[in-house]
Length: 226
Image (tube, rainbow, N blue to C red; front, side):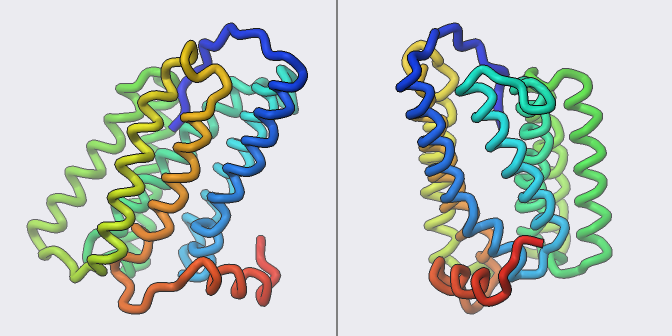
């Protein structure tokens, strides 16, 4: 999830170029989890991830260069909020035993998306409007876990995913201080840690995990994007 930029720092030309490089490099770390969605045939999350990836890339390009590409970086930021919160909620939904029940999974994903859209229209940069939809899905997931039991998780993937996610959230917290992070280093590092985290967390119900190399070979062999 993004937050509206309050950064009033005036960047030099070299700093703008550095920020664009950071944007390109850190977004590369999001590609494996995106292709993993295609590999697992999670089409809803796959296309939602593409949408979020493109919006995030354009958001940072517009912010770095202070330009408008179709819309302002603030508007791209709003779309990133919608996409990233939706992806996180889809991940939470996948933690339950019905993660492969396509009908119920679709229903919950669409419900979560519609709820996120309403809350984001209420105020896209109010943290409460991001937290409430996530908390509602968490309550639903807890209910399902209590009622139907906790699935057998891949402990190795779960531990790796949790560790990287915790570090990612710590970096995300520090990224809010624009005075100390005017080059958005913490923010970009958050992308790297969360990208690695989600790669593992999306596989916690898989008996046989795939590696980055497997996903690379799959993406090249299938020549995928769409």
